[in-house]
Image 1: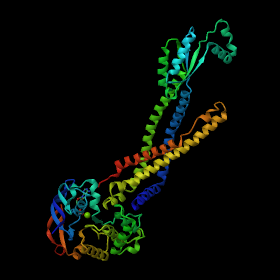
Image 2: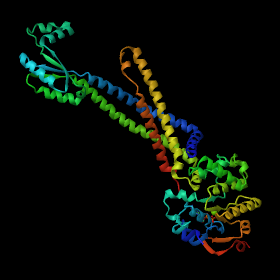
Image 3: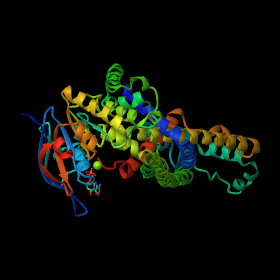
Image 4: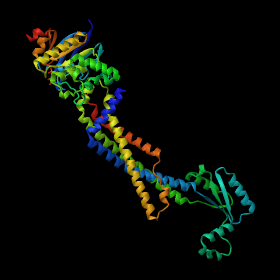
Length: 299
Length: 229
Ligand SMILES: Nc1ncnc2c1ncn2[C@@H]1O[C@H](COP(=O)(O)OP(=O)(O)O)[C@@H](O)[C@H]1O
Ligand SMILES: [Mg+2]
């Protein structure tokens, strides 16, 4: 117990002794992690936007024009008995025409000239929630396309595919930037620990000579690294939160993108805690690297 | 008699200059031995080897029957908890109080607060500086600092006490006091090895002397009196 207390006090004393470097290390770590955090925020929000779009996905199954009533009913039964289908709504040719007229009143004259109604009947299909992933949707449409009486299967594919592409891109950038800047954070913290190590060479030698184990000597430095990492990541979260609120206010004020400010979200508490843990891990790694390289000396 | 310390054909060379050459010797349990010889004879090297701070190029070293040249790195701290060391330059932590300095060997092995308080107070009393326990070592005289260093070395109840030129920074009066202290510690059963080239120490400790010569050869054993005289 006494020993634990001692080790914490040592770590604290080390940080106080090198106050300037400690503060600089925390600030640079915070700045570095903020850069990673921006990509993470972007990623998280696009992911949830993609999620909504995906949730909303409606598949339209267009029917061949000369289909008999019985064939339509048969097709409807077939779709409804499919366990991946949650709901189907039938839109007859007449309903389709009505909808078109309602939506594009100025253009309805385009249809007049054709004499007969050119719009096909269709089923609007909603898939069960667990089958709304891009892959599942693709597989389902490919299967249905081959059924007799089906002319065409459509959904807002481009949109979703494009967004998925962007998300994958940002994911890669986030991983790349995260890896590079995490290494930077480890180096920053490692350098700070190295300074402490050099300033305490003699004390360490004494500790070794009176029978301290390697871990007893190392623990204050590991604690110091962990505290630097925790403070750095906590500060970066504050910076990000501040920036995030400012951004939300800005787009709310311009009015052009209004509505979006209610859709974007900050990291949930669990992710914030995880990020602080990541900071602690980076700090540990930093001091560990320094201890490996500079701290062991002779026995 | 049991050998507490045993060196068998120990040699050590630094940059092709021999520091110790084919040294074989034995120190018995409870013995008080002087390790003498001119500066550069290898006294410090020998003491450092006994706590595995240095490894011999050749030969074996046993402390209480355990081969310290074969210790794993993780075992070395446990050897040092049994062997107290006193340095010429004291090696106290400047920012820690006298009490905290002496408590350090107990702290590193995870002793309880009660134990620490009791043993540190006892050790400080034994060396006569318990009234300065809350001061920083930098505010103490050289003689007092050496007493604190001795307290730190004995606070664990070590089986062996090693002292490397313990009076090198002290005036004759303090030297005499420190020597008495070592005699007292030895009288309680601790094996004591004092390395020195100080004639006063030799004169005052009339015990067996191991004399190292330049290049680390050992002269036949003698009593300190004979060497000094
Ligand atoms: N770490 C070292 N590196 C190189 N030479 C050393 C080292 N330690 C001791 N020596 C040399 O070994 C010889 C013995 O040194 P030392 O054991 O300190 O002698 P003493 O303590 O008797 O004065 C000396 O010549 C010294 O220069
Ligand atoms: Mg010496």
